[in-house]
Figure 1 (cartoon, rainbow, N blue to C red):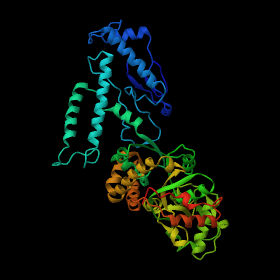
Figure 2 (figure 1 turned 120 degrees about the horizontal axis):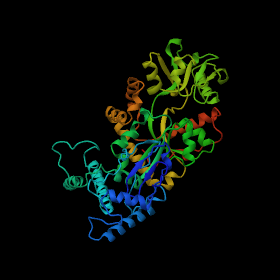
Figure 3 (figure 1 turned 90 degrees about the vertical axis):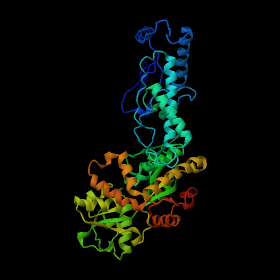
Figure 4 (figure 1 turned 135 degrees about the vertical axis):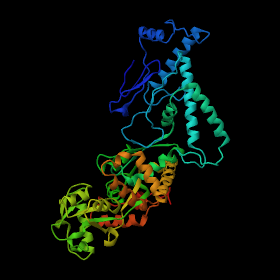
Amino acid sequence: MDSVRGVTVTDDCTQEVQADGTADDVRLRVGRASEEGREERERQQGRSPEGGCPDATDDDACGAAEQAGRVERGKGLAGGRHVDARTTPVGPPPAYKRQSLAVNSAPFVPFTPPSGVRCGCQRRFLRRLDVLRGALFLCRRSRPGVAPGRRRPRGQPRNPAIGAVAASGRTLRAVTRTPPSYIMRWYLRRVMDEITLGLEWFLNPDHVPFVVADERGYYEAEGLDVELWEPPEHHDTLEMLAAGDLDYAITEPIHLVPERSAGVPVTGIARFLHTRGGIQYPTDRGWESPADLESGVRLNYPGAPGPGGRRMVAHMAQEAGGDLTADEIEPVDRGFYHTDALVEGDADIAFLAFYNFEIVESRHRGFDADLWELADYGVPDFNQLVLAAADGTAEDRPDEVRRFLDATRRGVADAAEDGEAAVELFFERHPGLRDDDPELMDEIAAATREFFTPDLSQDVEMYRDLVGFCEELELTDGPVDVDEMVDERFVG
């Protein structure tokens, strides 16, 4: 047996998974056992060491066919993940570290030949039957008028073709007596277009539409296999997108503008969430507006002690009639843990906070806080989450972009129109998100529903104002062409 990292495959097609935490480099190989080991297994299976096959009329032909099958599988599998499409798929899908959205990413169940099956020809035949059962699985998921995973409502007529195929499926299952269609699921991961979507933060209710789009088969219907990737650092996503390590990324307009000005070739292609945001402040300090902030106020913001957060807060204070300057603000670096910084006394205010997250969290923890919103104090309303792609993606892969956004649009619409069901589906897929404080996570999810934007349209005028605002506060490294930074061809 030839052991490789992640997966080993023996010559009699019995598979075994070895979890070592590095399955991204999985390689599949077909090993050949020694002559002595082969003879021992054949004796245990009731075959003669000479290669005879009790179920075949010509022993030599059967042995030759089995050997040819091993050679052919070796050609297809020895090269790595990409198995030759003409051979029967053997082996599980790679166990990606990234958060998998794919419907066909169920845990791998090793193939176990039914009792009494001793011939390699029979085993290959049964594997092909399993592929057929996988096709039946897809047919059942795509019944017209029935959401994937749901039963057909009473009184709704069954598609005659589906009925015939289902009857055949019951026959095949009775014959093969093998696990569900794992081979077909693995095969689909090879033939579908794989897309990696980088998140802007850790997985949270802002990302409900993407999970809904997958769970209800919208991505699958477009031939897409979507993976979610959580960045180690908030600002890593756009750089990885530009480098080609990601296909798409979620970001905020306030990050898109400076990155674009620095020469990072990324483009906004859709907006899926528009919330309320601004300066998070405690209501028990007697402050009525940012004009009340005084010199020495402690501000928590990502990127501290950089000038960005301090300059924007000072701008809002001056718009409100105050005289606070950026140099008079004391930076605090607690990252995105705004509420922690305020509750624990490390900071007096925080920026940029979202209503559906930080304000809900503060009140849940008994800390009364509120927002001074951007638009009320002369700052473009960039409290948005947008999808971005590397420059040239729309030109090189327009069909993929359109399919990805069409499926995502359906997920966003579901999250906006039936938010309760969408959130329930989200937590069914990722129950661990509710482990620490399920009540808080439920409140955040409920507050997020109203902020999804089903049409995916982008506010081009807001981007123009934002570019001018960033240039005024010297937050850009050079000029930014809004028409090149925002692509609206696929939305609206």
